[in-house]
Length: 403
Ligand SMILES: *Cc1c(COP(=O)(O)O)cnc(C)c1O
Image (cartoon, rainbow, N blue to C red):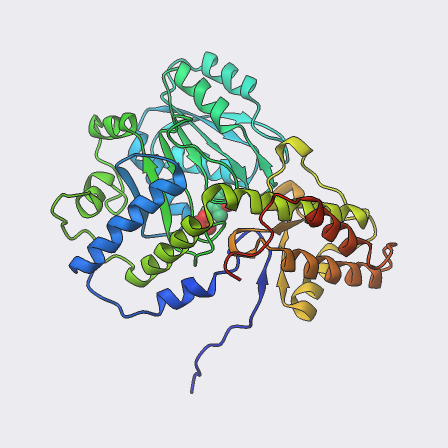
């Protein structure tokens, strides 16, 4: 007889999923009701306005796509890109590569702007690409590259795109909730995120938001959107405010309760406080890691607080350290991808998981594991450095969310 599945209690400090708040899990266990039930519809309206709060937008077309971040990405591309278009895709890690795939599958031509992994997107290179491709209608890039821990300057890149009459698609899967995003103030045309990184929710939902200019582009399409499920013209019939809601697909009811709860938590904490908390715990982790002699691959100015890419020191077995963390401490961290495979660890401090306790426990575990591998360090230094960093930040929120 197969038995019920009982997963272990992990500490999820990788590139996602991150730890889910117990409040979110509890919300998801509430009774399933109909997706056209008036009470559910009222919850959807509230969820939408909380997403507008998190994304700092008044965009009416703001909703959670019923699928993971990758589907949010696909929603942006299939709706805004038409066959024959040229799309400037900036790539400085894994996810820019996926954008290129999306463009090709839309029957369009990607013009690539490439930067080294670990570097932000270079605005000058974007400017040059737009000059070389006056036919381009769209620019796409990733704000927070989860594969490298580098943050690109969304405000500047969007401004350049607009100057060349392009719409800007921004990947904010890892950025949302952890680092500032100003959808309206920066003029972002299409933005998508994910529920399982800095929003402390389970994987499987993708908040998206589209500007008026993006909607005008969608309405003026000459080709049908090739994906029925992701065609926003149809999805809008279900999520549209005030409009009579029509059946499109059965919404993932309980998953949406979870996202609703995670956004209630974000509002309770305050978006700016959430950004400050991610920053504060990042600084403590950084000081702890540096006290151990470890270093970051991303330059200080472009480092994401929620994704810390740390060099594996010479002589240390990268995979063995991760395995020991998981087996002996039940802590998950991430490995490097692509050209960074074997070179780095990716330590996520995202959402609910971004708290002092996790920083201290991870540092203690790492000290012990690295020392056992023969790496030279003084036991206790890392914890002391992290605690000193927290103590020095007198104005930063230190506590975990509702812990
Ligand atoms: C995780 C991630 C995605 C994909 O999200 P899924 O929920 O895994 O589909 C896309 N872009 C970035 C930058 C990510 O970190």
